[in-house]
Image (cartoon, rainbow, N blue to C red; front, side, top):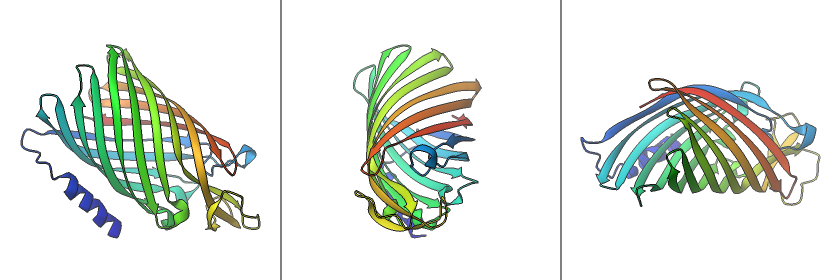
Length: 276
């Protein structure tokens, strides 16, 4: 309940801007799933992968405040269900505010503070999350847009070994394949901390921070965390299907460097949604 109270406080803070009758409503909801082949951040044959199911609901309003600028406020729910690793099943509530400003006819800047709460199957992972995003998008041609972004995230978990700060720098290019189809290629560098799992009898690895028992991926294990730098390549396809119904598919490959060991991750996702 304390975390819900924090989220409500964020909503009250973000709603300080008056969204009058001229505000436009927004809705995005859907369901899908995917597969992550390295949930335990391991290397080689020690990887633990699993499929997951996902759902999302986003509600919001936006309002043009002057000729080249607009504001928005939204809140939503996202959930991921892991049948094989219930500790990782998560329900997230998020509130965001944003400001969009057209620097030129083709260039748009986006600023967005955000906050929320996450509840996991393993309550030690429950967290209050907050951060901010800044991005610049330029429409280079009618069929191609480029984007650069920086995102900061603070995940303040019940157990410090699951807490982290994340600084993510990314660039992407969006190709308009047809009037109803978009393909996006991206690269990002993410500077953060990640949990690692090892047997309880193993000596604490150099560079490891914190240590606590964990049975998420097996018995007689402990989890610790270390600083990581992830290099992420991604491709996403967004396809309108019928009226406001759309299909979204994505793939991301990560190569992660840490003081403990380097590892890779393959992440596949897809879903069908409705938006207006």
